[in-house]
Length: 99
Image (cartoon, rainbow, N blue to C red; front, top):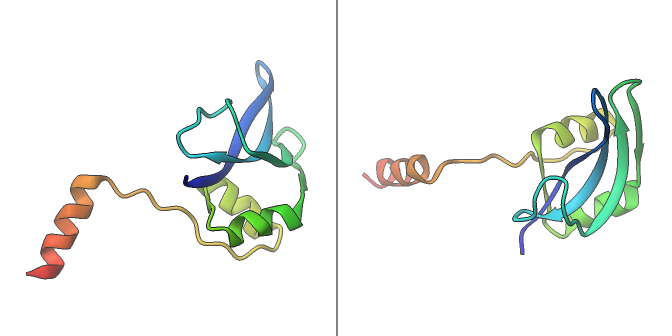
């Protein structure tokens, strides 16, 4: 099971509020998650993180979304962001490197 650390949206219409969650990558954005790791309020830029649990999931091999990566770097974490490479491009890159 691949785990992503990503944002799950909550809050009312036009008043976003996000939870930082560790979730299976197959789960829907606002659906089931493994653990809540913090909150982010973009309206007033408040960030609350459970740093020990975030570090635990990163040590277990969890990847972060681009936005979460930026938030964590701003809070002092040094993490590698998840880079999505479409399958067609990955196959083309492999065949080019072999030739």
